[in-house]
Image (cartoon, rainbow, N blue to C red; front, side):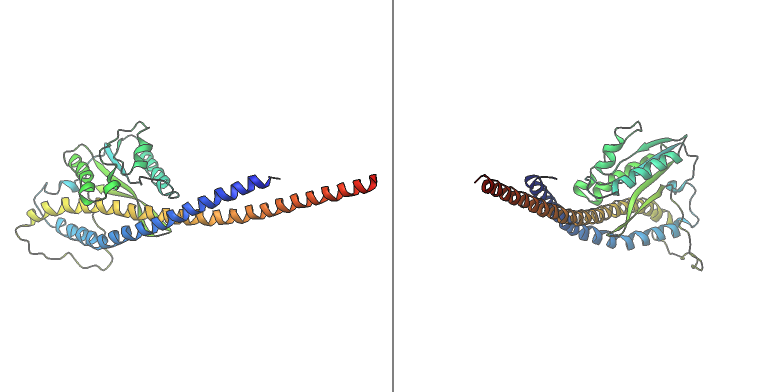
Length: 290
């Protein structure tokens, strides 16, 4: 049985850990609220822009205008796994790494390059043999549209000039604090939105200055917003996952403390009983000698 000093030290250690996890949970909760507000505000704009783009791009236009929608034989693919910069968020990062490896397996025979977003993805894939674009992984240090736009523009420019044949985003979509869903989403070429059953035909827009001018402006902007949305989804998911993980860690520390305190009390009682027995035995031996 462990001695009292060892059990007491473990109780102190677990108590300190519980205080840390509780503080981290509170910090994650505060960050989550801000991140959740950002993604909730962006979603309607992103969805409306995507629908507008699909409506305009579906109309007859000059051939070759929509270069981002060109289907081509796939030889080279860019994967964009979006993780966090830090750990302690459960399986959040591991799920993205796993989904990325699954995507690589499905692209057997193709040339795969990786553009990691987040230090965890960068640290993981820099040790492997895949070509790595390492210019944009630190966007979470100062998460702004401008920082994310640079990563999106790299993928778009390289696709437009024919270097990449497909670009895929892999990220956690935020549902709620306890639920994040891994999404493997085709970024390029543009995927046509499926129309719901009974949905009305496309709107008949009046274009000013012209349809071509609007499409040339709208498509790149919509793609950058889509990329930014994926990063914001991941950011909110990270804080939700960390909040859940730290809550569970705090609860587990509480359960462990109960067990350690019970062990401490039992050990203390056993030590007291042993001392009493030694005293009684000594007294009896002294009485017998007299």
